[in-house]
Image 1 (tube, one colour):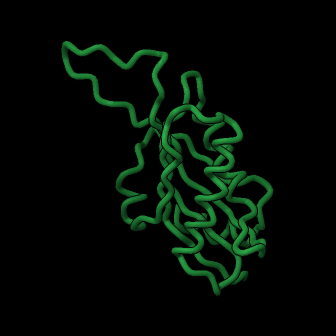
Image 2 (cartoon, one colour):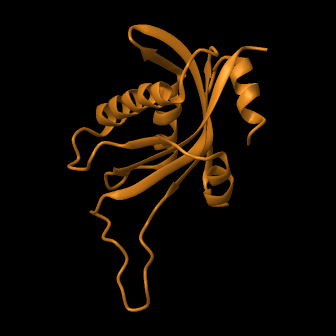
Length: 152
């Protein structure tokens, strides 16, 4: 079994009108596949669920306009190869990769950069909506995928 670190993760950002959750999920999982720390590359595997964080529509209110940015989120687990990583630096590395991927795809949409942070494992289980869309890193290191799926 590969020595690894598993980090429960929350990612959220505003996406432009017309953006799709599946594409957002693919951007995240692709960004996590290969991470960099000080010029040293290491493998990653991200699995979780993506969903919209739309504001609730109260009686008498109109839903958000189709031209507005939409708030998307992912709750899941990031596994990285090697046992010598610290959670803080892994989160910083994946944050850089996610910000680069989202910016490359959607450009400067006027929204702040994506927020990426470690959370409690319990929060992933308790706060992920049932209807959320499952995502995972394709063609990743098999041992990382196996280690992560034990948490799902």
